[in-house]
Image (cartoon, rainbow, N blue to C red; front, side, top):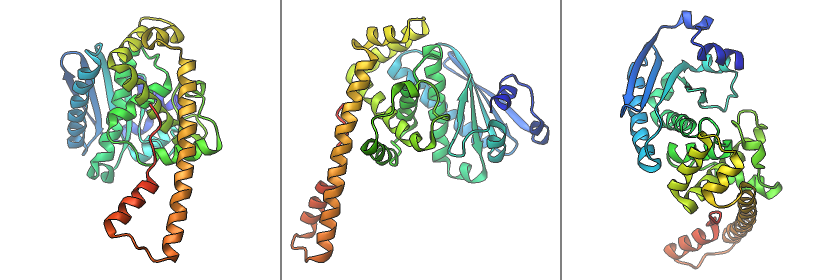
Length: 296
């Protein structure tokens, strides 16, 4: 994986590049960011679509976090099989960000069903922006959580996966989530993403974008990670991790109880006549199945 990526990042064309013709288009956003899109022949329209989506995201990030430092990002679109063979990335990977380069697999189906493709690109471009803001020093759990926040609506599979993990384990330790998640045990990946989203959302909603920006600035200026976290948020990262872990445990237990209760109600309903009216029954079932969000 590292060898293939290194070839890409150094601009040395690997063997497969000679078999495919690529176009290169440059975009600039508000004179602060440059995007270079490299796409196989035939995907030029998709390249423009992705660039426009990134431009909108760039503006949204600046609206929330303030002006971004100048930075340049390359978006390299690869045919799907070339992506996996060239990078060595796990098959569950939708895209990669590494050293100012977004590498994304594409095929005709992914371009036709562009929503997932756009989500992946927004996710990875957020990594690029956070990398610029933090000097590449943002902890993985926060980096991944913010990237999920900015990619769009929450993946509905994450909370159930996290609940199952928390019912059998403690939270995923932050020390395991300092870098990217591609090296995690596959059984831990969905829980790690879900936990990171919840922790990042809690941090941002509790302390605000200004404190988050200050934290990233401290990191970029060379403060130690513990010192930067304490200066920006007024508590130590260890204390925040304990708070998140406790909240997730309570939430997982509540989820388990609600699930058991819902199962009981469905079993009884299948054996006995239901006397509630349709609207009342729908409300009752909704209340039984409701899963509370972790306290933030």
